[in-house]
Amino acid sequence: MPSSLQVSKVYEAKRLERRQSIANDGRGGDPGWQLAHILTDFSFPWTKRTLPATEFRALWNDQHLYFRFDVTDMDVVLREGAHAMEKVIGSDRVEIFFSTGPTLNPYYAIEVDPRGEVLDYQATYHRQMDWAWSCDGLVVKTSLMDFGYIVEGLIPGSTFRKLGCLHQDEMGDYLIAGLYRAEFSHDPAGGRVIEDWITWVDPEVATPDFHMPSSFGIIRWGR
Image (cartoon, rainbow, N blue to C red; front, side, top):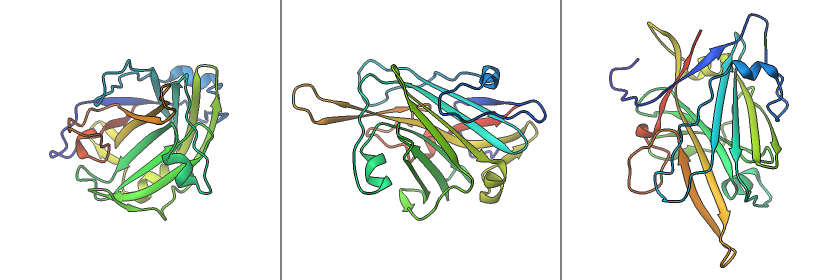
């Protein structure tokens, strides 16, 4: 692990058995998910609202990293628009970032709303976006549920390697990664949309910003 990376949190993605994969149905229905560690360690760094539950899971095999978010949300906000960017940025969503290194030069972001609309992009610190980038091999499926929504996705391991984001140390392979959630709601008094932000690692900055080295942790490809 790079000595300059200050990591406060590590999540272990368990390895699937040989030839085992996860059926990506957008509902978390594959029994293979029972192997995954359930990450619930999220926070509201910039608001005092009651924190709604967010669960993250990840598994991997020789071909793919599989990820899943289960989101409790009784007021799902979905913005309409002509383009994915307009829809996703104005909606509830989950986000996963991964980086080539601790300085975020560059890093990559995938943001997914409850309908399955995807906004993916490359960036360099701080917030220098390349909106033309798309994640090679990304497959995402989602479902709106009574409790909120589920987002399931897979990314080929070859994509992480090609981008230089699959790092290695004496313990094995790992990603420098951020896990986030945009938690939007309707203001009952006026109907406007209230924007709140949930993160796995608190970046400890005064105003909401996920695009900070301090908001990243480690997703380790475990055994």
